Amino acid sequence: MHSPVIITGPALPWLAATAALGLLLLCGAVIHSDLGRRRIPNTLCIAIASLGLVFAVGETGWSGFPNFAWRMAIAALVAVPLVLLFLLRLLGGGDVKLIAALLLWVPASDIPVMLAVTILAGALIAIALNLLNRLFCFIRSDTIPYGVAIVSGALCVLIPRFDGLAAAACAFVA
Image 1 (cartoon, rainbow, N blue to C red):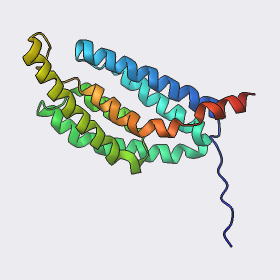
Image 2 (cartoon, rainbow, N blue to C red):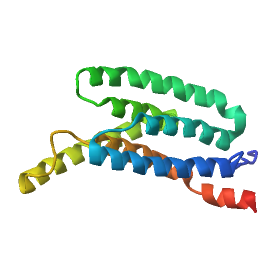
Image 3 (cartoon, rainbow, N blue to C red):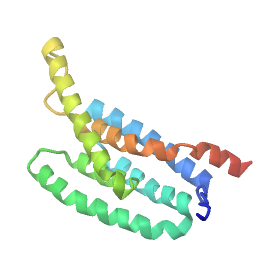
Image 4 (tube, rainbow, N blue to C red):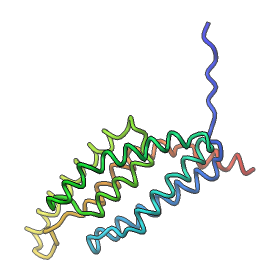
């Protein structure tokens, strides 16, 4: 006979839900800035990284900090080849920092999916900008707003994790 599996919700669901909402708002700000100025401000990356810790504490309490420390180590390891791409001028510095910040939110098992979606979204954005530039001539296509692709990849993985978080937060508060 199998022992029953007990599924528990977040330790502090209101904190996790607040951090998730903050991430969504910051992702909107990243997209706005990257589309408009082709820049991702450091303050947005720092805020996303900081909220990653808040979300981790909201999910598991302070007992989840070792897991968050592993995410920090993985983000640092992934950042090394990305810095090389930056030095070769193939990727912007803000893009490297944004990926590292968002990796603090993503479980290690979901990193390949996030990166695959990011690469695919980046290719689609590049193709679309090139076509729009050929059609309208005033669309900026000399650089790619890769922050949009990075956010797309991260949210593709994270949105399912946020499922039920608002309900858990409301139930906790009530």
